Amino acid sequence: SVGVGAATVRSWSEAFDRTDALETEGSTTGDVDLGVMFAARRMRAGLVVRNVTEPTFRSGEDGVIEVPLERQARLGVAWGDGWPGMARMVVAVDADMTRTAHAAGERRDIAAGVERWLRSRTVGMRGGVRASTVGDARPVASAGVSYAVRRGTYLDGYVLAGRELRGWGIAARVSY
Image (tube, rainbow, N blue to C red; front, side, top):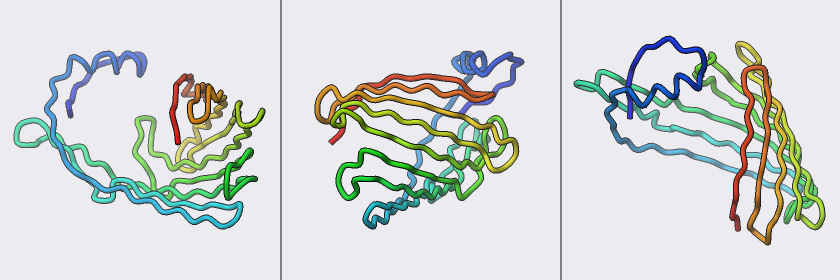
C-alpha cells in the first residue's frame, strides 16, 4: 500500500506510529531478482541483482502516487576454512554496485564480517561492520551469536550500533 502525509515528528519511531492514520491504496506488480555464485575450493563469489524490471507501485486517484523500486546490484566474496563442506570460520566482504535512496540520504554500502563456530558447531559467533561509500559514511558495527538447539534448529541473537542506528533482535531458525 502507498500513502502520503506530512507531519512534524521528533523520531523515526513517532513517524512510523503515525502511519496507521494514513489513507492508503494498494497495487500489485511482478518482478525478478537474479543471483549467481561461483565457488572454487575455499573461495566463493556472488552477484545479486534485485528489482530487475524496476517495478512501480501506484496509488491514489488515477495512480497519482508512484513508488518505483530501482534496480540494485551487490557483489561479494568469501573465504571458508572448510569449503567445500561445512566451514568453522568464514570471512566475507561485499559491496553495493549501485546507489540506493535512503531516508537518511543516498547510500552505497560496503561491509565486512567474520563468523566462527565452536563446540562442534553448537555455538556460532559473528561480527561485522558496514559503511556507505557515498555521502555520510554512517558506519554500523554488529555482533551476533547462534546456538544449535539440535541439528538444523538454531536460536539467534544480535546487537548493532552506529551513530544513527542502534538495535537488537532474537530469532528461532530452522535450516537444512
